[in-house]
Structure formats: structure tokens, C-alpha cells
Length: 201
Image (cartoon, rainbow, N blue to C red; front, side):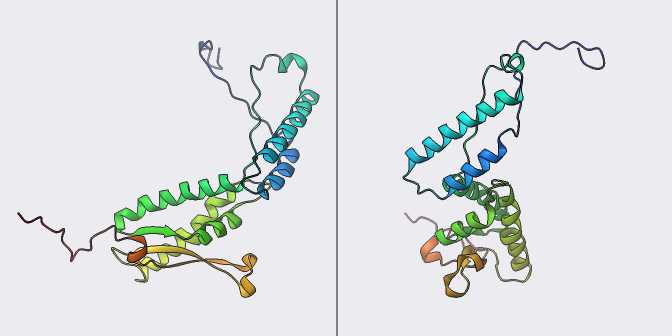
């Protein structure tokens, strides 16, 4: 029964509860896992199993057994790895690509550009949350200014690149937008002056 006296059938309800219990453990494991090479799957699995065991122990110290016994399942999320952050970068860039279709623009990014966004957008304490802000500031806002200034026009390929600082220092690197070469990235759109070829015969 809710606050208004209405009765609700809970037999088919799925209740999900979240907690920040053991958040410090997850942060520590996240910083470790983020530095692992992609082929060290066994190391990541051991780290996760160890973290899960410690988190469940913290859970038992925090909640009474009567409450825990009413919970059907406890899910411990994996710490984000570099591969996860790269996937999130691609998902966010795809959203930008969809909006650029209306302006007849194509967005491409170099591997170095992806790595720079991963570096800028990952925080061990906040996970991937800063990534959305980084993409907005470094790509969306910069792209809006470039389109308004005439740097890019209909039919262009917008190439996202990483510009490293002095001595190739990634910590001083920046994201820049340049025109991509159609010979490399293809020419996905026809400009207003171009017509599609008409088959003969």
C-alpha cells in the first residue's frame, strides 16, 4: 500500500538496490586494472575475484543477516578497464556522428585521438563520468565554433586527432579537429553541386 492508500501487486516486481559499500576497494582495483595490458585476462579475473570477496565481507559487516537473507542476488560490478573506456568513447562519438549527418559532415578519429580521449575522460574515482564532459568540451564545442567560422562545410570529413605537447608528452596533449582526406576515409556524402551517376544502357 502506498502513501495514498493504493494497493500495488509486488509479485512481479523486480527491486534493484545499489550501495557504495566498499567504494574504496573498487577504486583501488580500478586503478590497478586500468594499467593492465589487454591480454592479461587472468590477472583481471583474479583482481575481480579478490575484490568481490572483500566487498561481500564488507556487506556482511554493514547489514544484518536478516536483511541480506532477503536479497536473492548480489552483483559486484567490474572495474572499468581501458577497453571499456574505448567502447564508451565510440558510443559517445556515434551520437555526435548522428547529429552531423544533418549537416552533411562525417566524423572520423585517429587511434591517437581515441587514446587521448580515454586519458582525458577517465578518473579512477568517478569512472567514465567525466568522459561525456570531455567530449562535449573537446569535440562538440570545438566543432560548433569551427562550423560557424567556416572551417568545415557540407561534405567535409572532420578528423579528430591528438596533438602532443613538447617532447611528445601526452600529459600536455590536446584534441584538435582537422579536415580528413577523402582518399583515406572515403567520400560518404555528395555535395550540392554533385549528382549521382546515372547508369547507361
